[in-house]
Length: 115
Image 1 (cartoon, rainbow, N blue to C red):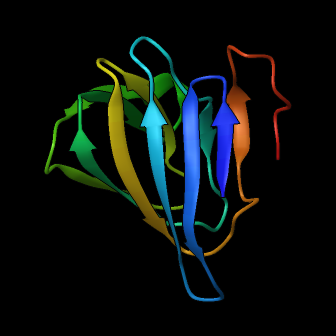
Image 2 (cartoon, rainbow, N blue to C red; image 1 turned 60 degrees about the vertical axis):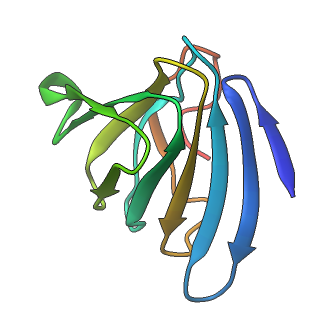
């Protein structure tokens, strides 16, 4: 299943009671919402491009980290984060199965704060 997003697209490759895997495309100069998860743990693995990930314990403490192909990053519940395309980028996200566990703190596309 492919879901078009304002920043790129999301392809759900597997979703079961134990885990889920997505392939995400982030277009250059686009970004997802600043968000955190209450339960979900996710690991991002870069396939192509360059992604800037802002990460911190709060909105005020977020710092940028650049990910390039072969890099990975694990985000635990409560960690505030945002992905931004430095270049058109493709990455995998493997996570626990809580598909709807997203708390949006800020979103440049005007989407709801929680989904």
